[in-house]
Image 1 (tube, rainbow, N blue to C red):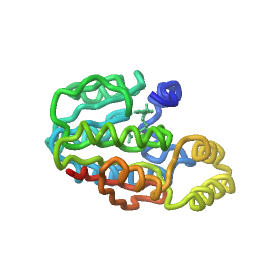
Image 2: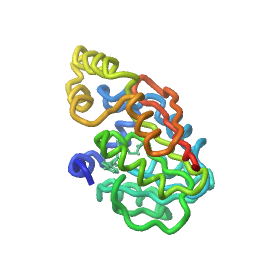
Image 3: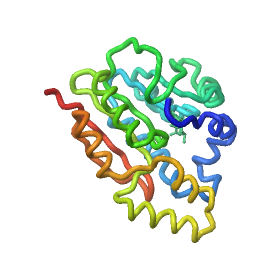
Image 4: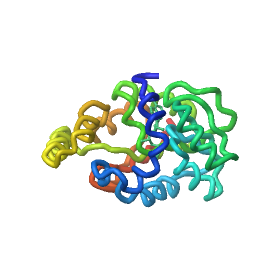
Length: 214
Ligand SMILES: C[S@@+](CC[C@H](N)C(=O)[O-])C[C@H]1O[C@@H](n2cnc3c(N)ncnc32)[C@H](O)[C@@H]1O
């Protein structure tokens, strides 16, 4: 695994579901339309699904409800406990985007929300190459995460956060590995995927990367 964020998420697990429903003013816009964002990911998912960074299980719940088979992978023990409380039937493994136990089924969709930015851009590239091998023919990656159209746009959003006195958000945007659409396009192309993007709120973009079979 790359940078280890599990301490942070073990602490956040208790109150995480309050944050996603707008309980933290600094993150309100990041989580705006949270339900719709999860639904959008579900709509693009198919077959046997592997979900990374399940957190408290909010996306897993919707995937299961829509009849998909789901294996969840999550590094934080406290997050796994929260998800298991909500979803006792969910197959939940300890692991992260780059390192996880062997998976049993053919994988048709690899999905994630609000988590891929924990990898550096180099690690994101490693992950896409790994997923190309893991995915079945016509498999896809479906991620929603904070991403910026350009580096300038990212700096603007950090400045806006600072101007509002949202110092935790500004520091988060500066210190974690939030990337840009052109960088993701390059990563996907290099790994053999065709990627498309859709904005879901001021911060979050949906990206769907279809495996090219050549
Ligand atoms: C902001 S939460 C998102 C939780 C959930 N997916 C959602 O949309 O509400 C980020 C999650 O990613 C997990 N995470 C952190 N680093 C990770 C990594 N390298 N690989 C996979 N998951 C990671 C955290 O433990 C946390 O549960």
